[in-house]
Image (cartoon, rainbow, N blue to C red; front, side, top):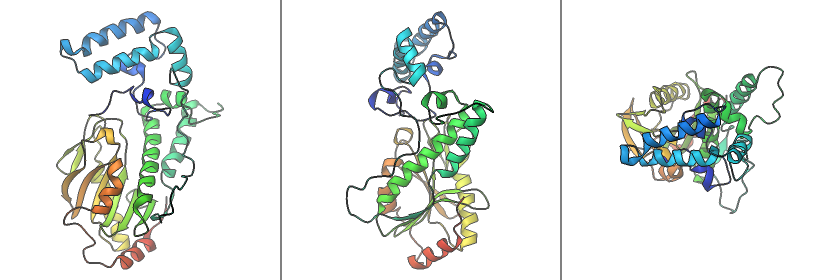
Length: 312
């Protein structure tokens, strides 16, 4: 189960995801609500979510945390300025280069994970701020929080790809990874080749629980998207150009949003899986039963993929 929307504001000195609900959204008031409106909304939400009145405990807890963040004038001023009442958020800028702590060889990788989505986010956030308006920090937490969901989703997608790339780098020298690969049907976030087969991966963060229905992913946050279907179309488009067939299609989501690893069956000849991000490297290393390279030599597959790769 996904944690309460405000939980991450308290347990780490880093911001929650770009799609996390703000205290105002949880209390169902506008950010400029008066003190009286805020208090009325809080009381109403307490009645609606209290477990003794048929509510859900997690939602009730989220309402309490939201009130702690904006219920007093001092806390609200701090939240409106920095996004947290205790520690200033660090924003959502790209992560610094990872410092190696061991000498083990990493997977060979190329491409710029998250770069395409970050470029789109930067263009959209400046459009949102308004022409002629200076945006000194496009990753400021308060600015991100006030942006439309579609804009925040771009940033969430970039961060998801960057986090997956860090996991994939730990696979070791026997694996090759390509990030942000162009296809005629849209981009592939990651292509991974190793002993467990040829994988096409989508890294996503919809800001809510993700479930499976057949070979597709569903849930209120997914909102009618068809991520596995779209991933399959892009993989097939690249496969035709490279003369390869993907062994598996994987959608990678935050650990809090998935019930666990799920094998969804086959779609157009490729196995479909849902992968919580902390399990990503383990799943790729161990593979899925019955899935592999199909007898094709790894060197030949790598040569075909490399010759066809074009980055977005």
